[in-house]
Image (cartoon, one colour):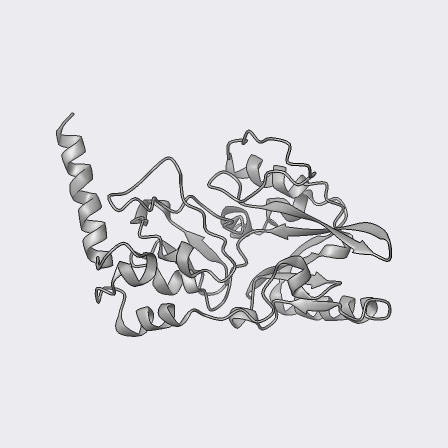
Length: 269
């Protein structure tokens, strides 16, 4: 019953319809950017940009070719962000498989930002906590409201070339393998990325180059500190200094400190 999306980079034309569809469905603000000498825009994920198309120029036999890759939360089965989240703001759906985020439960500890092997979570630049890390701004939620009602995610719906396909994860893994077999006739480095990485991703990729070419780690690992945090218990007071150099503050203290600050602020009005 686990769901997934299969991103076939060989079918992506860089139109960014997925970016626009994501912003429209989630009512995310547009961002003002500047010309950086590339068609890639915006330059990074943010609290208002949950998916974007990465543009890469690759030299190939004296010519230049573009590589495109859709970047967003990869919804790991063994998600480091879920393991280290002290408040339950990040959770993995027990049957559908993707990782959801409840902003109202975020304490601003920043652990998810520190430990994600894909460097996906971004800080909300408008809201800072006492320790200055800021809330996690937001991320791809797999269009949970759509998927839970039998509708495909907005990005998959908007894709004009079929580069993004939504469905049952098992079926998409098999489809991805078949596609890779075809590509290897001319592209020997073609591979299916995400079948096993981090326990299995729910954002799968058909790549026609090695993962590193697309800025994906070839062998992503759960950070040892994240495993230790989970094993000893989220509320055991593992020092924030080990994670972000901010001193020995446990997650309970952080959440409590933020609550006190909010109470004082409300009382002052």
